[in-house]
Image (tube, rainbow, N blue to C red; front, side):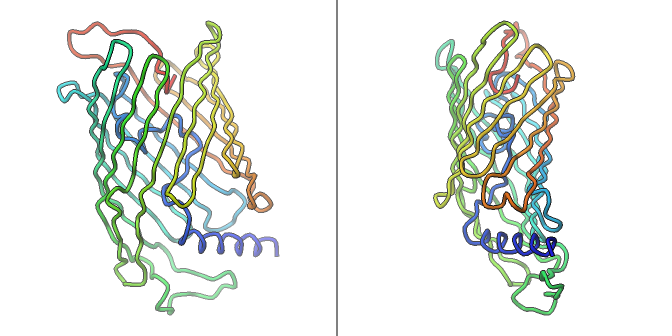
Length: 314
């Protein structure tokens, strides 16, 4: 009976989500993954970054809970006066999936010795569709219902995003828009259309060296599709060369506990656990997210590298 209750809750959440939920996937470790929503950060800070994230949302739901994987690589491209990158996304909720690939370029220029401006765009393709046959909570199959998409139906559309950021010393702020072209996907069996909506992002943060060993990094991540808005307030701390962690408050949704370990100067591991505070808290035992990032400093040929800590990553 309790299992059936969970399935019914998820079923109605997914139905309502088709009408009003934000379409872009949610990440709790967003402070390490700004590039995924803002192409202006491609190759910023003279740093190569390869990142992989896996998220399992709403643990405790037996079927259909959202799962997301994101992989990206971005690095400076000095002869283009900026940076470039590629990202891959796989997002699944129930039988519905969204898969995407995008390429990005950013132009970055020094405004002063201590400030920098970046402007970037990404262009890619998104595949939306259905995998597996739809089944109602009572076990009834939807295979013969003409209004329910059949397994394998999909559509692929082009997708465009734009972004910019400004950095001065230890502070950065960025603004970006995803799905700028607002493409419409028409499923191949003509049972459904999927209208992508523009999502607006505001990100900001700074670094505060409290002591020679302790560094604090407050940040904020705002996501809005002009119907609903999600706001994350983050506080991360790094102690010494290896240990880091933090806490996030996601307005009206969750408290997130974060822990991580720098395996060496190039390789970072992170984990986030969402404690649900919304109406789903009685049915969900939280969400889990893991991150692995490999990075190293780069510099133009003939230029002596400057040694400073990246205010977004370290």
